[in-house]
Length: 289
Image 1 (cartoon, helix red, strand yellow):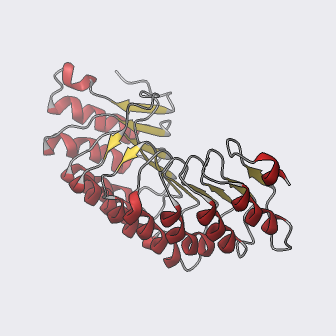
Image 2 (cartoon, rainbow, N blue to C red; image 1 turned 180 degrees about the horizontal axis):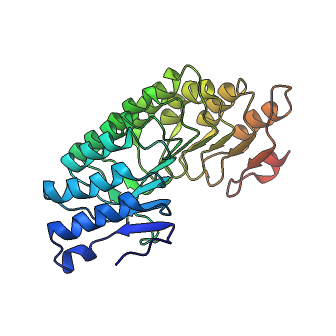
């Protein structure tokens, strides 16, 4: 039995232990398809057989209430392909998230995205014309993020792009910067690149894209940015007239010299910042001055 008065539903590995049959998946698909209350769908596990996948996807294609889909596992190439097809018609969908999810709140749990999974995710993103918020949280790409970044080239409708706690690598930084530069009319309000192991070289490849998309909120906390990277960032955000919030917290390599570049920007007429976060940055007396 399914409760039709819930705002979220989770497809979990419990279906394995219960020895679900095709008829069970058909019932699940019908429940999802007929539900008018489910707004968030968590996918911790997904069946492998095509008939079972089709049963669930058939229900998902009929649903008109789901706004968020959060995926915590590699669905496999066929299921991802079907998901991309289905999401083309899901006009209410707002958020697509990849990551461990609330069932796995501790840092040791992550989502490892290999080459085939990256290809599949890129294909899904390429078909998500209604998604406004794209989130990767605690994902490890193993050098594969560049494939996903290429799919972002045609997604200027995104209002939030978050890669928090995900290692995108140098090639990923280059590809992401290129993707952001491709957006002719950006809608981006929030760009979260916190704890992505971004160093100065990586940041320098991103600056042009960041400047072009002109976000309201830019988070670069918890990276490996030093004075050279901060100078490049400041040179870029001078042209970001919409930028209201900037977080550089927990970048201990930034010194008083780097903060000097930042202070010049803060005193300039081009600065539009309302909130600046430097928690964990070693300001010192020279930096405070």
